Length: 299
Image 1 (spheres, helix red, strand yellow):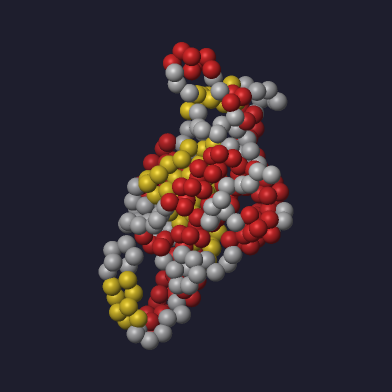
Image 2 (cartoon, one colour):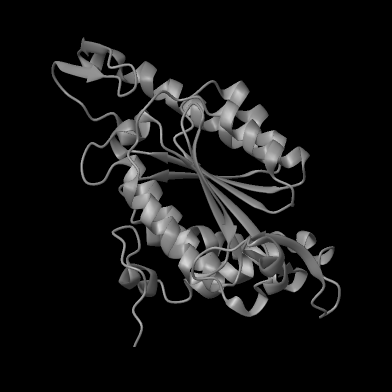
């Protein structure tokens, strides 16, 4: 029996534990962007769509041997019916994502979530790509749908470490400009940046008629602010330090955080962007099941 790809971010028993997660994902995602599927599909034909570079592990059924014979270049022929859906995962790898109070960091949680979504998309025969970013695009893996491609994404996730300053808007605008085909865009980030510029970048995707889901990831301590006594806080990006007594600033901090979250929730709703608040103390498979179930009920 062939074993699936090994990765610390893909936990098969956790994915299996949710039972109908894969089925839910298919029904929800397909229903969510059903309008995107109609125009590319022309009955049940296999009309040629485009060429793309060959990736090791691709099925050779559509390898273009004629092009290879003429140019010595390796290309695959893609057909419309093979491209059920294209999903682009945008993963924040800036320094603030390294925060952890207990258990896993925000970045590790985001990687677990990205790995699970990649697994689901590939097993639904959908194309999935991964883009990591901080102030700029750090790494970009084009969308594909093969098991070899899934392993490639999982390997890259294991190599990543969160670092650098946050600058969400610039890379998101660059990605939005480069996407040629409408599809599903999933942003996984703490969104800790200027909210006007971030929303403008998210609306860029909507302007180009992509569907957008945002998973806003926080550590439980960031949401509850449980600190006591004299505490030194350190910025993970600038390394600046602040020593204070949390009880002095708790009320104002929590009020600002509520405003921060409420504004994203409101602005995303007004822009037809699906916003989901996530905390790292909730097991990712339970969060994803609850989210997909909610989407299934509200389709």
